Every structure is written in C-alpha cells, then in structure tokens.
Image (cartoon, rainbow, N blue to C red; front, side, top):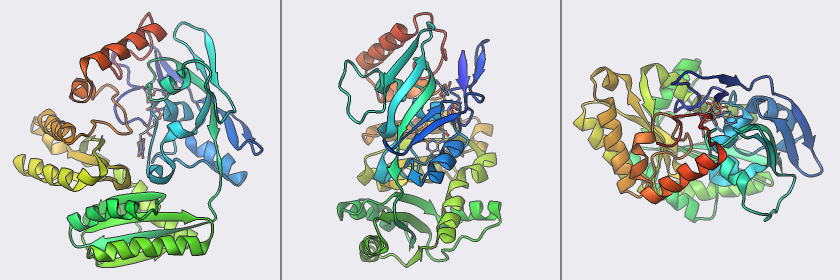
Length: 388
Ligand SMILES: Cc1cc2nc3c(=O)[nH]c(=O)nc-3n(C[C@H](O)[C@H](O)[C@H](O)COP(=O)(O)OP(=O)(O)OC[C@H]3O[C@@H](n4cnc5c(N)ncnc54)[C@H](O)[C@@H]3O)c2cc1C
C-alpha cells in the first residue's frame, strides 16, 4: 500500500510492485485553528496551501515553508520537510505536537497531543516523523503555531565570485543574526526562473547572490539586522545590495526563487539534496565543478546555504549519455567524505537506497529494519521505500 500526496522528489509514493495507491486528498479538513494554545489540528490529506490560508486568516504563522504548497500535511510530517525558512525556525519536526496514525496492522494510535512538553514513554511520534511512510499512515496532525513576525525585509546581496558569497554565510550566522532564510543562487540560473515566470529579477550585478530574509519584532529591529548582514557582506567584497521591504517586492523575489526547480525541471534528470557542514559548502561547490569538468557538463547548484543544504541538479543529457548513476555516485561519495549526508530534506525514497551505506553503518541499518518489522510485520506499507 502506497499513501500518496504527490510532490515528493525521490519516488517514495510511486508503486514499483502491484499494490494499492492510497490517495489521501479527501481527508482534507482543517479541524481547528486553536488561537488559545497556538496549534492547528488538521486531517493529513489537507495541503500546506489550505492550512496556511486558514492559519494566516487567524493572524498566526506556521513557520516552515517547503517549496511546493501542494504537499499534504501527512507527507510533510513523514518526510520531515525543510525549505527556505529552516535557518531560523527549523524543519517540520519542530512543529509536530501530535499525530493520529493508522498502523499497518489496522490499529489506530494517537501520539502526543496539544502539549509543549511530553516525556511519557518512548517517543513514537518522533519515529513517525521522517519515516517516509513505512511505519504507519498519518491521518491527523497537530502542529504548533506562532504569532506572525511584525516586520521583514529581503536582501539580495551580489558578489562577483562564488567563494566570497559562500564565505559570507557562516560569517553572517556568527554575528548572532539568524535570518529567516539564507539562500545561494547564481544570477544566470535565477534568470531562467524569472524568464519562465515572465518576471524581472531585480539584481543586475555580480554572478552569485545571497538571498537573505530577516524578520523581527519591529522595523528598527529588522533594519538593524539587515545593516549587520550588509556590513559582513561588504567586508567580503559584495558588489551590490538590494533591499526589498514592501510585501509585493519581497513576494516577487521569493516567487522567482520558489519556481526555480519547476523552471529547470524539463532539463533535469535528478535533483540531489545533500547537506554538508555549513563551512564546507564552498569546498563542496568546488568539488561539483571538478565533477562537472570530469563529465564535460554543468551541474547547476543552488540551495539553502544557511543550513548547509545544497541541491545539485543533474542534467538530463547525462542520463542520455548513460553516466547518470556514475555522476551521482561521485557526488554522494564526496559529500560523505566531507562529513555530509546524501539527503537533508527530500528523503531516501526509492532512488537513494543504494547509497545509504555511505552514511549509515550496518548496525544502524539493522536497527532501522527491526523497527520497521515491529511496526509492519507483514511488510505491506510502502515496500521498497526508504530502507534497503
Ligand atoms: C517544486 C517543489 C519544491 C519542493 N521544495 C521542497 C523544500 O523546499 N523542502 C522540502 O523538504 N521538500 C521540498 N519538496 C519535496 C516535497 O514537497 C516534500 O518531500 C513533501 O514533504 C512531500 O509531501 P507529499 O504530501 O507530496 O508526499 P508524497 O510525495 O506523496 O509522499 C512522500 C512519501 O510519504 C509517504 N506519505 C505521504 N502521505 C503520507 C501519509 N499521510 N502517511 C504516511 N505516509 C505518507 C508516501 O508514501 C511517500 O513515501 C519540493 C517538491 C517540489 C515538487
């Protein structure tokens, strides 16, 4: 049985053997936005877009923002989705307070509740989070909410070279300013997304950009954080800074960034999702250049630089040349060598299983298989997903 929302990037919900695809889309009620406890209770097939609408109407904030609002709440939980805002607010795991789960054996189990602290027994709820749908079917979620931030600004800081841009990332974080988002993009790449949308990318100088979103309790707070960021970047030879403070300008920048993957998709065979220690990103990008050179191609790369999470896009032509798996393997090996991981937020799904031993030892894999067997003794839920 394969529960399915449909926006995952690693084939998790794709049935590869005969079975039942379980569409969750009609289980889509937002049951309650609880303003007293700052929580939302919803059915797991509701989309992120639907939940955000109701949460925002209540003047509250669900901080994580993975790029596709068509993802369902159950999918977000079992993939522990991340996205651009994880730098300041962390990933979906930090917001899950309760779950209702249908076990593969048919029992319904309630985990957690409207609680901020809970040490009762082993934490099954956190095992469900990031389980990629192999331990149970999530049918209801309780997420923690926050009051909206009062003010925000979006900076595009431009650099003539990638190293200066990437070097600025840990330096910004070391000042104590924790941006809402801290993204790395290259100008010719983000231009593809702007063209795809028929919009204008506002930054015209430099080849590498940092998109930095700062939020705060008032405008002075935001401007002071922005000034700190700009000072760090100017010290590292930033050639230009553009600050958007109106809602429309900021939304325009975020929209162009969010549509990058759909704009590139027709030319892409796979989007990788590695995390390396944040201070290693520049080295990792150099390694990607070496691998690009080895295979005579360009591996477009951008990502959530503030989290050390980079998305190398493997061009379709490498698949056509029959070297796709070799290129991917080279990249995985280098990420692991730097103390990184083969997936930071998209998960293992069906297509990253072979590489798991690069990051996990035999005992860890054995323990994970044992847990899976305990939850799903008949191996009926998402067979072939997440674990070898
Ligand atoms: C344009 C685009 C941008 C994206 N940006 C981001 C990003 O910034 N950050 C990020 O982390 N991800 C991102 N993603 C990936 C994707 O949106 C997330 O992985 C999301 O969490 C998947 O949710 P889904 O409901 O679509 O799940 P699906 O793709 O349907 O399923 C994913 C896995 O979860 C299982 N599953 C689904 N629903 C349930 C359930 N109710 N109970 C148990 N198992 C279930 C499936 O069987 C499958 O194994 C992006 C995807 C796209 C297309």
